[in-house]
Image (tube, rainbow, N blue to C red; front, side):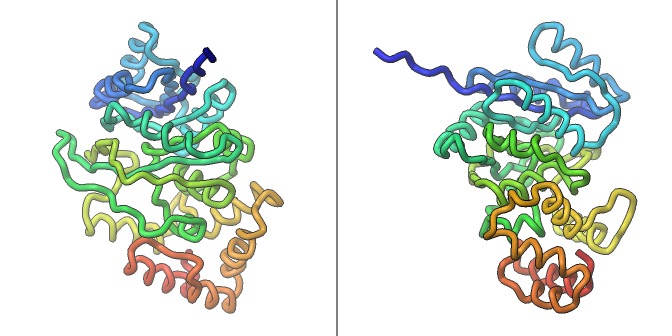
Length: 310
């Protein structure tokens, strides 16, 4: 009888920052995963509370591994450091993890099952809906199902909530082999890269309770008022660290160059050229090749393109 192959290894990448309030509860849900062969890799991003004490206690009992160094990089670069560390191992999948959520026991098993249906030679990313809850885990709502996923959406919007993302080995190597100089966020960058050069697998199953509370570094806006405020800051403000969507698109071109598929290049070029050409802005604003999930957001996007605020 042929010997059965062992389950693929999964690295869970947890970036922490002043997360002592909910961290242990999240770790317990990682330990309770039904999928075997999970390694939890943690990087602290400069916490000043008791987060590192909690992590050291978990490391001393062999539950987690901690990256050396804990300077404050911000969430995007902190997660990229974790991903690069995972890439140096034999892990076959990498899952991003936030410090304050609650995972269902089958979260990793569902993601690996979905990704295993894709050829191992093809870079792929799994992501899903989440259940939004308050700090006491009381239900608020669910993130919406995207009406259409693809490169034209990834250029202008991120539908991949970071804590739901799982990358297969080819995707890990793709992202780590071409690190960008500047991005909006690690999850949006992964959605952009994999929609351009790989495959996106989206699940409607909300396997995470996504906790909203006053200390969220980055979070899902819980209502229309907060969503509007965030969009106004993003599109009309230009504060420190602000990055335009067009700049992220240029970063994609500069990072991957000739690796970008010929079918993607015309839209990417038009998107970049539109920043300096009224003619291309008009073409882009009228193009059906880019879209946001909500029709109202899609209309605002096209107005902003004509205003050159993208």
